[in-house]
Image 1 (spheres, rainbow, N blue to C red):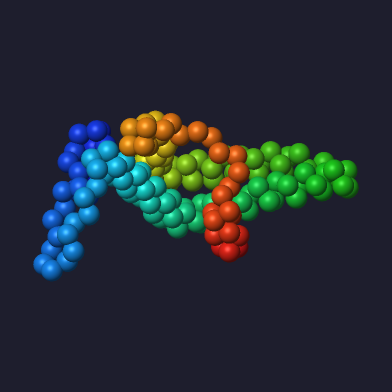
Image 2 (image 1 turned 180 degrees about the horizontal axis):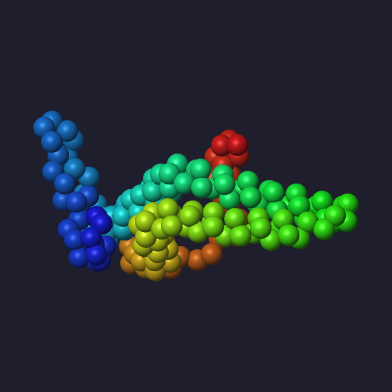
Length: 163
């Protein structure tokens, strides 16, 4: 899992895994199904990696994001004051916009290393979701993946419990 084109070339650990000790015989999985499982596992690895990096990004940039929000709120307040009272707050708004640009630049700079790591993960998940997984499902089952417009009863029941 993980290397370039691993879904196309690597061995199939699920089909060839050896039982340890007195465990039951290893499940014999057809090669195409094992390949599909490996691709889906790779996809979820990327997905969880992106989530972990995003969480770290949010923690590391919390103060910068708060500063941007604070300035945005101040700008909104000045615009509302101008609209409500007719007080000309344009000079203050312009000054705040300059502060906002600086705060956004600081946030962007601090976020950049994270986005450099996150971006390829997002692209990999998208590629696997749109290209590789549907083709592997078709290879394994002989049936093309088609759009579904209604959630199954079992899934609907599960997601309504999550609320």
